[in-house]
Length: 308
Image: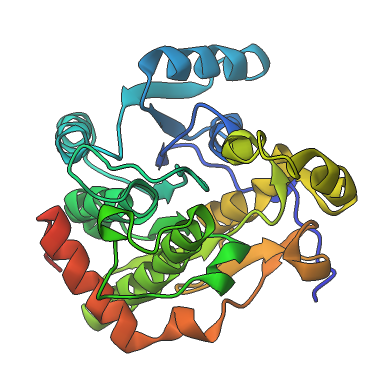
């Protein structure tokens, strides 16, 4: 594994760049908004709760006075909310340099989005698929723009099952089976989107990143399990804080060296912690037939057709 060190100090100046960070009010998204604003970008911090979004903005601006941060409401579990956000954004902006699809939920009990999709896949993949599609015209017209999808080491345990993609009525559902499928879907989507950009000579790239084992509030649904505290205490030395965990997605969003289809994660043992470096996703994430089938299902379920 590479010993390359990359820090926030390595970020280029982002003055004039427009960046969307979904789920920017906490965790990895919060750290990403803070980093981008600190380098001069105009950052749109999206949150299901504008109140939480505004609180996060104030917290960031304490140390980044003059940072350009706009809070906008976005609920990825609601296609109507996604459409409203996309339309509002396009009324205010005529470019989009980076779309960081960061928001997500993890290992939740079985429940449905407002549109009737299993929630983890509905949020982590289908919500971002719908959002990206509705912002595609701006992405295409912004030279050098990037779509960054945040995956996870859990993608290695994911399996696509197109006969029961969304665990209908909870059939076959386990929190981790669903989460890992959603993270595999993030990568299948990334690579298929990159192929589409290339096939249509679009000067944009699709890339992905993962945070390793980062201490955020994402695992809150596990905290009441009887085994969580003893296991977590053993795992702490192999984890990293959310600021370090955000570096792969930050680097993927802004480093000029990043190429379309790249995947970044931590450099350490098992890609659990360490400096952000180029890593490899598993064979299943590069399965082109699965990627295309997922794309077709995604357009059908979201009602969003991509116009390249």
